[in-house]
Length: 72
Image (cartoon, rainbow, N blue to C red; front, side, top):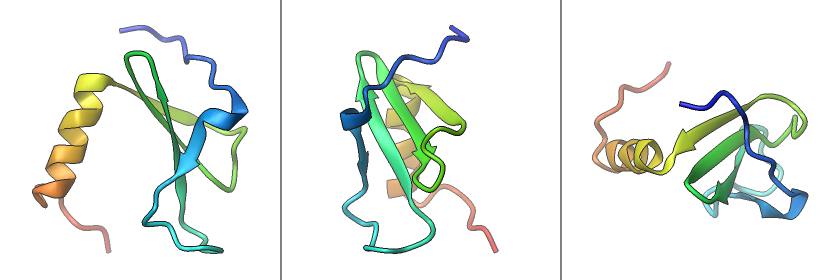
């Protein structure tokens, strides 16, 4: 596993279509060759989580199947 974060041009980031306008809890995602990165939309220069394509597909499938616990 690489410790290097891929460079993401500013126009590759997007918000989910499920994010409402003006909400305070949004993430943005960027697709790149071999994976997906996510970041806090309120702090675009902050930390990013980078997932391989397989790890991201597994995460999305687990969310869709409601296999993850709920917060709160």
